Length: 122
Image (cartoon, rainbow, N blue to C red; front, side, top):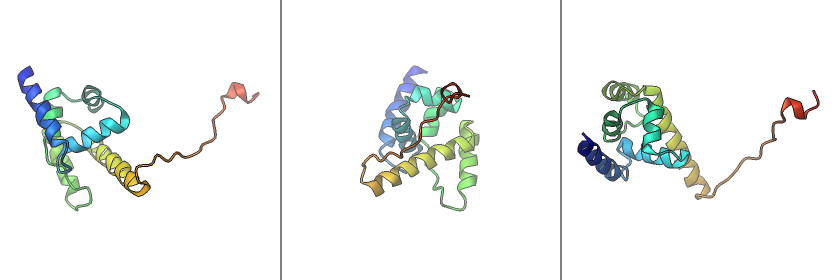
């Protein structure tokens, strides 16, 4: 079984270079969130085999009318909830578009620090 997993990891690494594969989104999501494949397996609540099978699937285009049906098919095949699949893909697409617009410069939004109730004197 471990030979099969190792082969699937190699195939995933190759597929992660091409946007038409789910592996592309998993790789970028892991990079963005600083998570390993093992951490993503836990997050997605799936087996190793299901995760690597998922990575090697063709990615649906979320802008197409049949995208919900495709997400449901992927979910049935891999036992990963369709919402999780969609969220990963949308997250990666959003960050990618943002980086294209900003020229890969990191822009940070300023936010007020939230004070603890004990710090406010209440």
